[in-house]
Every structure is written in structure tokens, then in C-alpha cells.
Image (cartoon, each protein chain N blue to C red):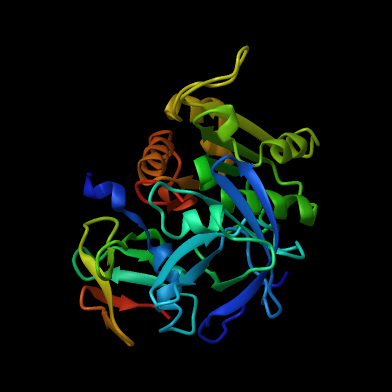
Length: 86
Length: 250
């Protein structure tokens, strides 16, 4: 299967993000650390069938956010995001 | 219903299954009583979690089908081949069972009835579910903003909410429903019989001058084809909100 068919929207991460943030995150603006584009998180692309959840920039495909769960531990990486507006 | 205010982190809760409605042979609506439900906005979803006796858990997201004004929360689920959660929800769940969920979730793919820009809703299969919440919300709130639903299904039997949509569209309150049947059409069918394309969107949808708000939901290839066609027709990408279901939908 073409990987593109697995793509969903940032909206699909909303439930997991709600465990971390008290604010509704899909309307939060995210600046891409790669190309600098600013989008609401819900407009970026998500891949949720990997062992973790990955959010990628909808313009340049740079990885913005990764969430990996191991047991009770949830690791969140925002290394690919320049900033997030809360 | 007031907009969901900033609130604490979501937690899992148990709902009572109070009614089950078979929408099509593979699609079922589940109506729930949730004691502490904070209310939702049209377009939001919930996460449903099933736990097996050995502790194994599986979790999926399902769009809310009911209007914020409705007494009971409804989700509509399509049974997917090998879908471990959807096949249970469609085939085995019974009235009186409890269902674990958290929500409402998401603030991006939502529509509130106080908006005044014309509405274009484009659905592929069970992608109609969050759009149905918007249509029901529009009706329940008495909103008169013009709305069009372009709904792509495989066959007439696969059209989810078919009777309710016919009833709502016949009310002449500014809602237009256009169906396209991509795989098989009933005898005498005069509607569209192909996949949604730019020509169809141009005929059914709004001119760019109307500055519509567009919501597109369905399997990923469907959503991306429709969103690209809308951009091709001159609609600003920022006015097109998408919700992709992944490869299979639901």
C-alpha cells in the first residue's frame, strides 16, 4: 500500500494530546522547524499506525511531533517544531 | 450549547448503550447515555477503548453523529474487514452494555451554527458521520445558512442516513443533498454515477465568490482528491477543512 493512504489529519492526535495538554491542541498553531510554515496542528499530517504517533508538516513533510507510549510512559518529542502557540 | 471552554485533561468514562440503529448492512449507530457529558461541537470525535478479559486494550476514534442539541450521544461505526474494534461495535455490542470512551475531542474540524458563510460538505462513505452532526446541528439550532452535502457512496444500499437525509433535504430550508453512487446504481438512477471530481464540485458546490466553508471527510485518497479539486477550482486552502480516515475509512 502507498504510505500516503495511511495519512490522516493532526486531528487524529487530539485524544492522545489531551492526556498531556489541558488545552485543545488541534487549533494550536505550530511552526515547522524545517520550512517555517505555520499551521494549526489539525491541518498538519498525522501517521498513527506506527508504534508511535507522528505529526508531519503538511508543506514539507518534516517531522513536527512524535508520541511514543511504552507501558505507562508516554514520551513526547517536539524537536521538529520551532514553536507551538498555547 | 456553549463552546467547549478550556478544561482539564480528558479522562475515560463509561457510557450506557441505550439504542442501536442499523444504518446499512455494515454500518450501525450507537446511542449512548453519558451522565457527565460536557457537551460537544459538531464535527468532534470520541476515542473508544475496548478491554479484553486478559487486559489487552484496543482504541479507535469515532466521529460524533448527533447534534450538540440532542439528548443522547450517537456515534456511527462502519464494520471494517478485520477491524477488531469496529466488528465488535457493529456485530456484538448490545443495548444495556457499557462502552468506555473519552471526549469530546478536537476543535479543528468543527462547525458552529452561528457561522454565516455558506457550507459545502463533501463525504465519502462513513465520512458523512461528522458532517451529519453538522447538518443535525444546523437543523436543531434553526440556522438558515445555505448548506450543500455532496455524498459519495458505492451503492444505494450503502447510503448512510438515507431516509433522514431525504427528509431533511425536502424541508426546503436551504439544505441541498446530492448523491453520487460510484459502483452500482438503482434502475432509473438519474444522479451522478462516478467519483467526485472537479467538474462535479463545480456543478454542485459554491462559486469561489460565495466564500464557502468546506468540510471534507472520508478515506484518505477521497479526501485528498476532493481537497485538491477544490483548490484547483480556486478555493483558498485555509477555507477547506479535511478529516482523513486513512486507507479504509471508519
